[in-house]
Picture 1 (cartoon, rainbow, N blue to C red):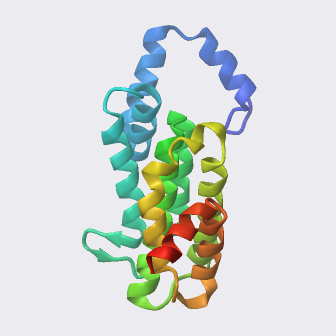
Picture 2: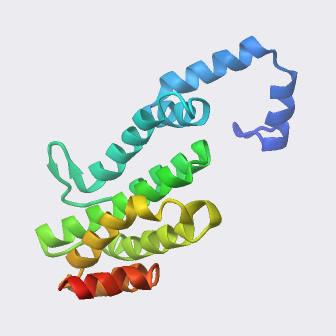
Length: 192
């Protein structure tokens, strides 16, 4: 074993392969009890069908709390926390629709925060654009395309709300959204 308290993955993997099932279950139990993040991750990984909406809602709450905590809006949002929650959800569940939903939730909350407080930190500004780009990449996949109708109304609303946005973030979002479906924007312009 290395002098360092951290084992290389190959060493740890070998030790885990030698462990019995009860020992591994006890390890998972300890990790589960250790933190809320671990509970969310383990639950998302192993309870894919059963309770999937509750799992998604737990991750959505984590994303939203970065900008609008139940005790009040964050004075200094931490975009990295929201991004990590989205990445953890996808890694644990493999649920593309849920991941797209969380990505769009993040972008919506960045915009809401920007409008309510007339400013936002640079990480959220850049991250909001990056997350919209990620959403667009996911919706263009073969699996993601079938979910476009589910997100269409939210995209329309985000497009409208980003029109007079500060700092050019709205322009970025409008660009990404407009590249998704030209027909959508033709209908929108005919309605106005």
